[in-house]
Length: 172
Image (cartoon, rainbow, N blue to C red; front, top):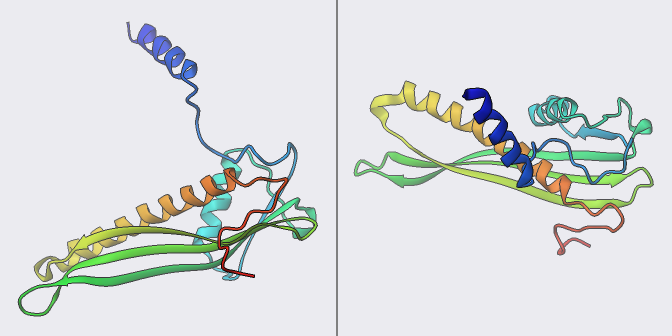
């Protein structure tokens, strides 16, 4: 019974066009991506690299081997006070995780210039529960980082390889 249900589910899912989302498929076959960052200890670059490796996108070890280069310019984590209680203490924070990045091909042509991905969350704070709220913040930051990586990879999927794309038209 369970086997029959699994087969029916697999057929239904494949018929509707659903598929696992992994590496971008818009890059030409056998092309390699090199990931670099301005911060040598970038956790974001390491996480993106691991995800793309497991999803089957060939990654270059050196920039000279790459057909495309993803550069992560900045990783930013912020925490802003949104509201305060009657004693003037923070009762709610806004957590922000952001990244600025760009993509170039091996001729130096910009495919994506100064793109930015942001993830926002709200964290309610209670001074009586500092330890648990600290752990909640840590867990939310991990979740936000995963979502940020997903947004960057989604943007990589939408790059038109044959035409330059500009995310920030205000830049020259």
